[in-house]
Image (cartoon, rainbow, N blue to C red):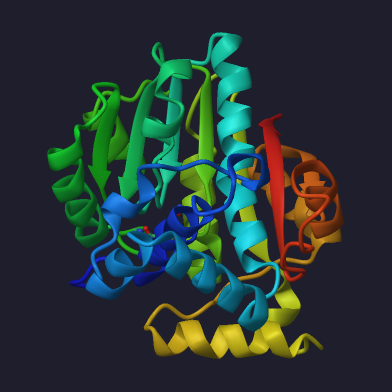
Length: 286
Ligand SMILES: C[S@@+](CC[C@H](N)C(=O)[O-])C[C@H]1O[C@@H](n2cnc3c(N)ncnc32)[C@H](O)[C@@H]1O
């Protein structure tokens, strides 16, 4: 079992933190809290400086074109979905693999009547809670520490007060890539039991061709090797046209299956096309 917090979770916080160096009108997401969660001193140093942050953004644009775009669109899309559903009576949000995501802080005024359950690996969650203790934990957040490879997170959610019958938004960002196919199926079987009528489920996934190595994108294959070296290899992917059939046995219907082009048109028409080897799907309970 991993002992240290997730470096990829820190990477996501870094991207949201450096996005703050853009003028507000050009940002895909505004996250004034992200920098507080950075633990690596070099990252903290960079985000304290506007010019170093902008330099870092240029470096990402060059080395990983579209990464900042996709990885900031991802939480923005879920913020919008949560805001929309909260206005329609949403009661619970489950964030699976929450990492250092700060939705509970970013849109706290929109989520006042909603209980947010953050589910994550104990090591990452401990690091997050350490920071939240300093900057203030929103009172509607509950923490649920699990290892998806081993634990029954539904049981743990119930122990934390989650109601299986209430309308829920389930967000699962940046996690499916890292699970084995068996852990994916097991987790989806558990996700299928969460929430009552009107429950929605949003997640992102890697294209299967990156996992099996048949992708023609050198960029994608290089990134796959890079994350493997960080100790968090990509293990799972899907073919976009088969997502509906894959999810149906788990009781979900796909409502939107966003391509990078659609995400670009919606969130950043004047910026780079988001990474081409990942997708976002919004689903509803059948
Ligand atoms: C790329 S980060 C994404 C974090 C966050 N959702 C975001 O988008 O900023 C992946 C997250 O999945 C969690 N994770 C990966 N494998 C896990 C496992 N086996 N059990 C629990 N959490 C896991 C990590 O701790 C980390 O927080």
